Length: 197
Image 1 (cartoon, rainbow, N blue to C red):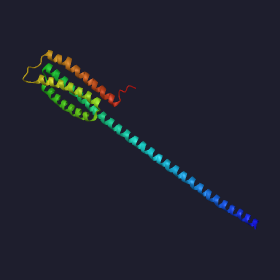
Image 2: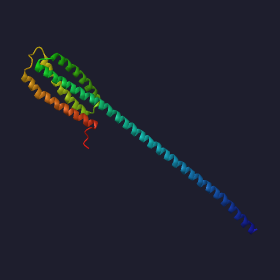
Image 3: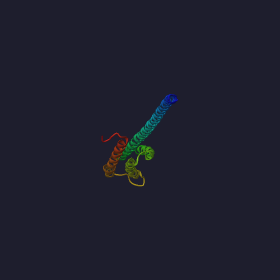
Image 4: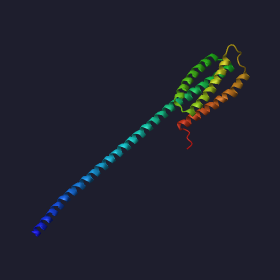
């Protein structure tokens, strides 16, 4: 009977080993499959996160380009308006020298002033602070010139003589040129046109 128990024990161990091996193999296969699914899920999550970062980056870049285009259009309008305003002031100055066409030049001055003020107001809402300071300085200077020219047109005062017009040209017009030059440089720098590198 001892041998039959040994044979039975060997048979039980053999069956247990076979069943255990199958169970162990299945358990390992399940574990490997679970690890593969976790790795796939992690990869998909990383891919989604990467795609989201790319989308956010592209959206930020699109917003940056949109703001740049908005500033560019605003700055072009602003620069043009300032130049036309200054041109109208100089035209009025020449008309005052020649005493010819003063009324038409004064009317053009008012129109160009209105256009400059509108573009100035728009730029105040769009431009960053350093550029706004430069725009403000140019606006104050050109407005100062406008005030002097309006005094020249005042009927209650005598027409300015050549010396007063020459002084206006040599002082105020030169200051305006310098202010507008600084303005153009600030606008170009903000748009990245004149980057140092």
